[in-house]
Image (tube, rainbow, N blue to C red; front, side, top):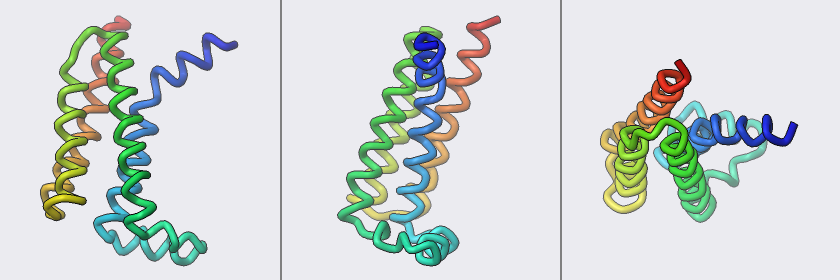
Length: 126
């Protein structure tokens, strides 16, 4: 049972990180639908840079750890490098040089990195 639980985390940590990163990034970018939902359910306090900055950093790091675990499984650095560049771009274009389009490209890069990681894992399993 413990080994199965560990393999679950190894396989899904990057996806959990990307989900959290996407949530934090969309809040930072002021995505109207998400902000409305948070306000409606009483979580409007989350829409604050003092909360979102550490949250985004934590989830970006979780994503990178998950992608690194993928490297250890399939041996290819491609997904990790895409994820690293995308994580840096997402952080920079949200908190340093605010640009919604470039931040969106960084977020898309994180999703692509996760998809590449899944593809490499499946290919290794065959």
